[in-house]
Image (cartoon, rainbow over all chains, first blue to last red; front, side, top):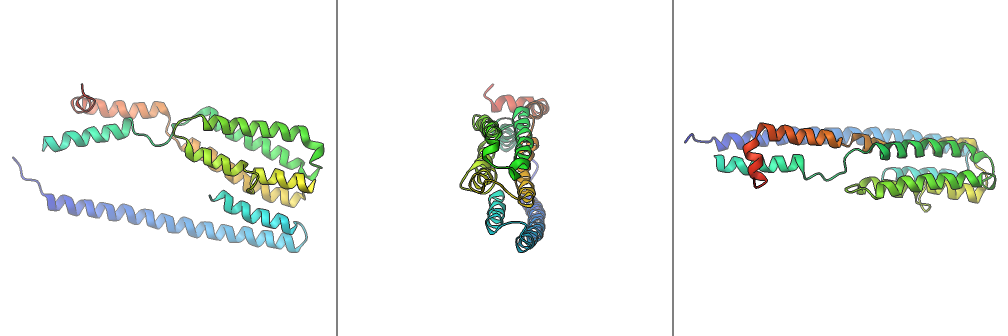
Length: 72
Length: 162
């Protein structure tokens, strides 16, 4: 019976897990940054509209709460 | 070594063929979501008019949304989509349900608010239809299972007790 290189399998599995996990973490950080930037842009737009009297304070609150709801 | 491999192949086959944790793609559900979005947008455009003047259309939209929600609720392994619909329609939140609540209370809404809200609600609808379109087609799932079976007929038959 051929001997199995368990140490090699273990090392390769560990390397693969690290590569995959590293990719997921990188993607998650990039998505979070992207979301933060978009959310900031929206918030600035809505606050500007409220200041200009184009939307009411109630409208502004609804938009902010709606943004949170859509991320649930 | 074969003793170790047989259960492993059986496990892979089981995962690929039978242990799905999410429903497969459903064309009707996808159409329900995209139609509901279009109808919601059409009605929201009328929110610069009084709520009471649009009562009939509002009732019709509520029915469309309710049908779409109930359809998804009746599908197995579809909890994520059902929860998305619930957030979207809940009158105590601030997406479609909340918009209709505010429109009724305010009687009219400004065009700027309607446009902002349409963008927000549209994204929420897109998440529902996007999830549906990303689900695997049931015929594709069967093909994958058949292909695994073809490659390992002995192992998969043994895994199923044949």
